[in-house]
Length: 238
Image 1 (tube, rainbow, N blue to C red):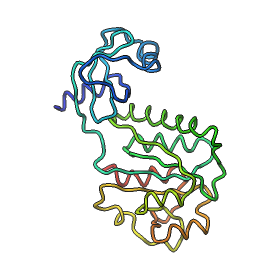
Image 2: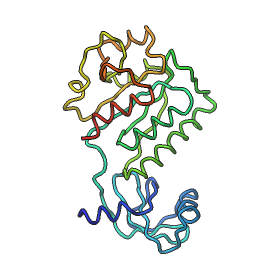
Image 3: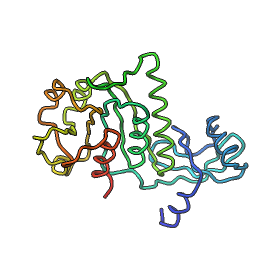
Image 4: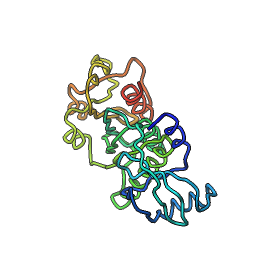
């Protein structure tokens, strides 16, 4: 794809429609129809971009509630390094900020969990609703930032479970004795998991689990909603 084509495609109204076919017209989800027709005021015949969540972009013609593929492109907007954020649950809307900012720069996965010092506890009855809200925030952020793949979003019960799934995870720690270099730990890796603690920091038992995984970004202490973005930025933004 030429630079001119990329620039032209970047300006198209776009939406993620996972699994959208490349070679036949398809029905658009109701929410996306509402966005294109009522919010953006587009009429049938308008050119739109559909992201099937497979790394491609479909240039389509809007036809009522359907999209008709015209061409297939592969914008090179995804990062070369896969970054997973293991985030202890923060208070209020801080989780939304983590999902929004980190999705925009290329994070590929979010794993949320309650830490010992997390004030927030997700009710099991509302868990899927909360995860769906995060997925919606991620999708909107990815559309805006011209990504072609959506990050995965999941929930586990504790830091212990998260570290069991990601034994090579790098854990951000505010312990003053921490001297391990973040840059050295992430250098040359194609897949990285970053664990971020809650507002109150890691509890003693969690520090035992962390062991030698701990690193520091520097002498200053960052808010939990900023730490993930700061760390991921050092990896994903050249």
